[in-house]
Image (cartoon, rainbow, N blue to C red; front, side):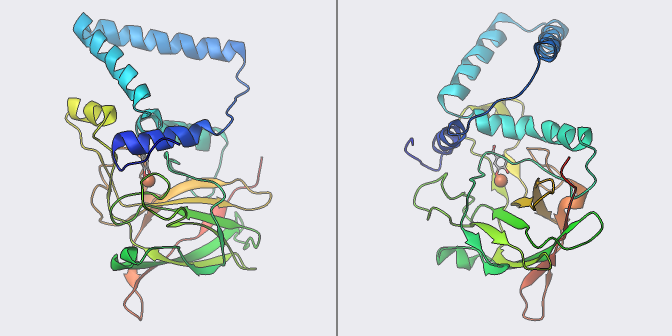
Length: 282
Ligand code: DHB
Ligand code: FE
């Protein structure tokens, strides 16, 4: 693994290294590939002619593409700018009706340690300075029956906006866990409220954002992957009502159904209930 540091280059390389450990394939036919590639080339040709793209602009593009690859930032750039459309198509073409998905992003790591239905996320002493959050709910099928075999994988950034395994000096499974729900599908997780998140922007992805006058912020979010035997797994994110950047996410991944509104419980700790509904497997 490349040396990690909390820069775009460091976390980009870590995300690229992690991605490369997977084996990816798809059963796309030659006919489908041909149709998609032709449409991509036609769209690019239309853009070049419409905007009368210059040779200088073409060379800058070539250099930028090289830089994104060399800095290991393709997982960052793709998950910020394209994944939300892929996710929307995935939801619609499968006619799902359960909990809405959202982008996975570049920082998911499988096989996080198992935690019981009522648990506290692994966190460092310093993380405990952040406001605590009790996140609870039930995983059910479309008819509302609890799913006892379900798991809720949760991962999120710390107050400094770093994800464990993608920045140095953080315990391997910090703020990552695979929660096993109880026999009625319920869970109650104590964690911390994540902060708004700035995608690494000191590399070519940051240059891209600056060049069109944009900002690199994502609203504070929890990442989730909810699974149950015989059910469709849902990868999603949850956001916080009224939080910064909820209305203007650089990754365009917020949906109204995915916004939490925690309220102080009797002990004064922010608490929120969110139930997950899983579609049957196709
Ligand atoms: C990126 C980071 C995230 O935490 C996320 O949820 C989506 C994208 C990124 O840096 O690309
Ligand atoms: Fe994230």
